[in-house]
Image (cartoon, rainbow, N blue to C red; front, side):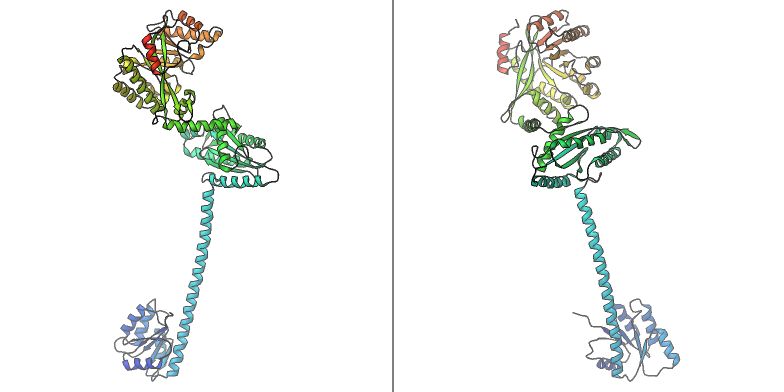
Length: 600
């Protein structure tokens, strides 16, 4: 409902106020009355008026003074004032009135026609002013609305860009790539002559080491520069995106055949081969590229990206920079690896592991002197999985730690059971991985296994694979010393296969050296292997460390070892291999211990 315009009438005589009200009746105007200047001032503080009819002669504050104060208030400074007086003013009074803020005069007795005419004029002016103010306000509101809409549109564009692009490099991100890839695949499949879409996933080998050494700022700079180089070699219809971390993707649409992707991969490798100069540092990375192409590697975005990652995983394990296409063999291998890793995570809880034990015998009489515990996994889904398949994966995933603790406890429990049965089991050897030695948990696991089974520490031997990761880690060496302080024996496994064999012997006193089986192979005909094996035997004798030869499968190998172990230190030379026995289940080993069979 539209609010009526209001007029303030000010007069100390109520009769005059009544007369004015009667004259302005039915004009559609709200009439507000005040009987003094003070009351008029209160009214103009509370609301706006289209016009003020102000009597000049009033007791106390007269009309002139009231007008002056009305003009001094911000809200009423522009409200029209008409003075009402019973005396015709002279020039001085007129001037005084106009200076006080009046715009006109009315004379008593008031003429209804004159009064209504003047009131209508000022009310119309007021209404026009209100309309202009409303129009201005509406225009300002419209301008603000348009500005807000523009800002919202810009913000929406920015948000859309952010959701589709990588913040660091400005390249399209995974979401944008998958959308573009899906569109490219659909377009390629719709062509009369089928086209191929290829993905090349680019990995920057060495990036993580640069970040760890020089910091994230240098790493960020490297990624930005790598992105710029890849954009520089990409063709206009190709898409360069960043997946995550140190991985980028080239999407190559509308290829006549998948082999056409080789050129793009070569361009990417060449672009990334040059050193990066960042914050005063010159650094280099080895780029590796995994390539997959539709339709044979995948018909949708997810399948194609998966295939490219499979190819990348393979090229990562190969030396130097390069590229590799996905193949059915690689895909099958990746599927099996995934199945093994998935099953491995539940194998302990499902009691799918079992230990076999390979006998160790002592030369020269080939008497049984101990066992090495070897882990086997019988998966309900995968069947019997060989240790060469699942042990490296357990190392990579860290599962080797809980699995190793289970092996340790189970092996000690079996050795204790044989001893309790009156069977002589001098040594139970258990393999310990470098990953296990990286944690204090190995000490707690060994103590727990000995305490829970009651096995004396002298019956337990821990086989440590020689590794630079262990040799160069003082914490690992300290754990080896504390393990030895528990009373267990420590042997160095696969001796001679690593790069740190002699350094290992220099920095730590092992109780036994295990000669790797590769040096025992074809020892009769391979002069190099024969010389290395003889040198290791001589070294062990000079250092006073007993030796164990792995992979003994022929009588000729036994003869060689007998010959070169004549001057062996206490503990002599042990042998282990298929000539005497394959790894056996525990019950067969129990029978073997009871028979005390010797090697003929």
